[in-house]
Image (cartoon, rainbow, N blue to C red; front, side, top):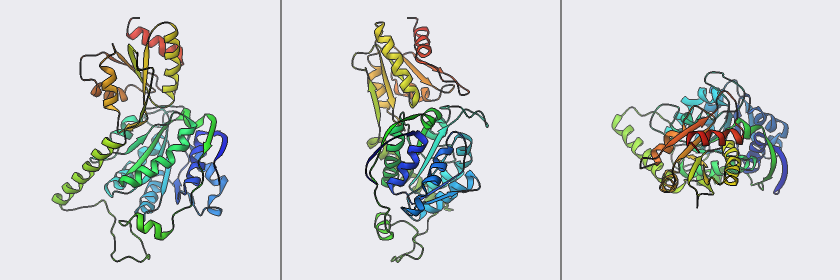
Length: 360
């Protein structure tokens, strides 16, 4: 499969990118608004072309533990779900992080808490970036704003997960999962052979594959002193990720008097708001975090030095705003505007909220 241009949903782009990346296995369970990922994989039948395993598990708990088992062998494995489904996966995600295994988790967010609504949300920010499961761990969290990024972040997520031996998450709101855009699908690359996996992943449990020693993959350690050393190693890895893997985009920040911060589809809405504001003579800039963890604290901090205030826009009650406030080192007004329950604001609504917050 060569590079190909297609019109498709964000969820469909995830599935096609996974096949082209050479993913070894997908284990998932249907839930709106991400069911098209599993449906597309089933329709494409990659087990006949690439050998990729596609399995609908009996539950989200089963699917994340299948990912745990597959990742233990060094295989490139993934799952996808939506907010309440990812809540059920948290124990397994914590186990995968503690076992230092690479894996990709896709969360296409819907409104909550509880079963909530099937409409878009960004209210899983805390769950993804602060470690929704137990223990001191992080996920690498990528927040796509376009269908193209939905496709691109599959490869990026796996590459980062294998580089640092830690799970990565694509955290997309339901808008990006369901909307259709033109996307350039990446060229296909072949799945790795058992010999290539053994060379890339000397830590993996290899089953019958020949090795000089036998690896045991586990997240359990009964000796507290050893468990502390394990945690210290995890923290060194997270510090390295924070140094090297912060990603973000800026718009109109060279001359801005005010700043908006938003991620995912909301950043696109804010950009339209900013364009209208500049027509009215109000200079607003935008920072779009691409990695929600690691978060672009330094970039926001530097811009905050020369603006009069910041508006954080999210589809939640105010979650990313906590990280934005941590980035601001001086007394600067940082306000929040958000809609909940699956309601998405239009650009004029965001601009009106901005003018009200800053009395402009």
